[in-house]
Image (cartoon, rainbow, N blue to C red; front, top):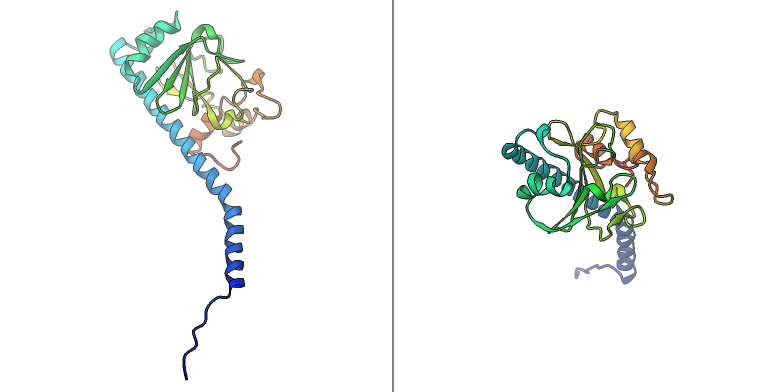
Length: 222
């Protein structure tokens, strides 16, 4: 007897492709979100490492951090920061970040990779750690000189805060607080209502990511 070759019918093939399509549609958003989270953490970690190297080298050349001058942000940047930064594309002065940073004491550094940092020496805008300088790192370049919630849709995804402690080390706002306290503060930002300026909402989001072992956990407001 001759062997009969069996194959799939057109209906079976279409059903199989339909199932694959449904599964892909269900899993693709999760895959994309996970990739975006990993990419974001990678940018934050790289910036954190690079800025600590900047402050280490600056202290080696200019003395201990406690002896530095904070009278003028442009002088501060040109003397202590500029010589040690790499891949800088553009510098801008007078950047105002509502509720956090005055345009009188801040500068924006735009990097070649499409990220930016706002460096400020505004002692009146402290995050509660008696720091003399703060850095706001954005994973995307913001083209506005006045930067608030209307210009950045998801600060908890794109904007991350750092402080310079009294030893000249780049670290994180309110790092001594519990995870729950920092997570609650991070969640103060609500896209529908804007930023809770009164409590500096979202500034501890970087702290949560760092203390979670450089990852964005499931309860993080992504």
